[in-house]
Length: 280
Ligand code: ASP
Image (cartoon, rainbow, N blue to C red; front, side, top):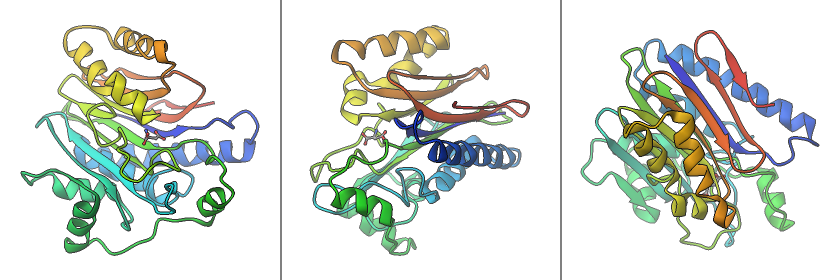
């Protein structure tokens, strides 16, 4: 059993030691709780659990603490993918729910598994998700001051369960200040992809991740026989011509845990039952 989670990018890691420590502590405690959960749950159940905890932390740009778009509103995106069934479900630009990843989970048995905008919000509210504002005073102050938010902080999780099954979940509040209608990578196969061989969750600039097809491409390369480190190296090299900004976490079916970023520094933590690794 293995778990890796990420909390997006954190550009101030060298200067703002207090926030850095808070993020390290939050990631360590969430990765430990998720590993405990994985002992009695599937990989798919566990990635939803981990991402729910990350969405509930205002430190990260997903769920509570999501960034605000150019029109002053928050729209969130999240996706869940099961490596065994090969099904992805997701919500794009959903509003006023606490946990977009749980709405994505609820959509999994439907034929129409990816909903956007008003349709996603209406589905959630009709299916028992209470109206909830994920806005925090910090994000509002950043928006009012036209400041770039304090580092993008999408969240994600990859888990390998006791039966050797893989799953991935990713959730985001977006880039901040984006045009209404902009689509994030997080609820696409570029940002969130898994099969029986490997699972990958991404963070960074959604447009770069979609252009690079990052998660789907890494997983496909591993499926076709490339070792995980080579699959990452090749895919990240392909971001270079346009200085693509991306980070990704992964676990393969052999239990190899991996992460890479194109720019400093993605925040992440992993746990394999013995060793906790956390970003420094
Ligand atoms: N990938 C997200 C997006 O572009 C942002 C992030 O990772 O922080 O919507």
